[in-house]
Amino acid sequence: MTIGNRTDAENALRFTRTNKEFPGRDDFQTIGIGSRRRVILHIPTQIVYKIDVLWNGDADEYGNDSEVRACTRLAGIHQHPDIPCDVEIPEVTAYGFSRPDCTVDTVVAMAYYGDEGYFPMLNGYIRDVFYKARWSDLFEANWRWFEGRLVIIDCGSFYESSRPLCEIEEAVEYV
Image (cartoon, rainbow, N blue to C red; front, top):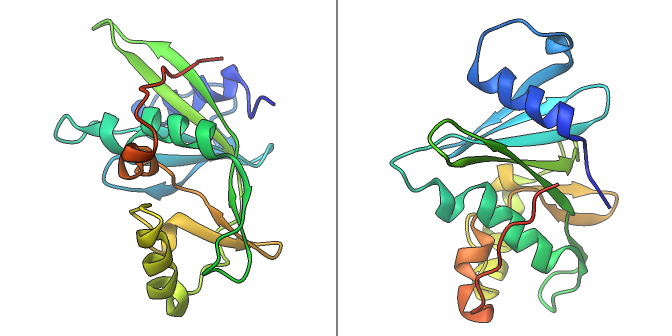
């Protein structure tokens, strides 16, 4: 299943990287800024687009390419013996845009799970459980409680943190 579309992904990239006006600019809103990525919501479709922000040159390790690899491998509903609910890893779609320096900007599209629904008092518990599962970077901004399940909305570090479980280096497939 394809999440989002190429035009909105390109406009999210444009929204993040320039201040220039373009048709539909008001349809986008920044809803998250991390050390490595920005999260842009396309309001009419309720799709988020994640844009890498190169930080110290190591964005690939925890950025969009890593998230696409992790979500491609792990997407779906999972059960864990230490968590009393289902855990969802969302499906994502990668859109690639060529840059003048012959590199590619990867924009990740994912469904929007809202901006509420995390509970800081469970944060330590959830972190401990996922640490045992060798998944890192799970602070409260990276997961949501949605329709009775725990949804991991930031899987950027999952690929690297679970690397021994997956020795094959997959290529990111772009739409």
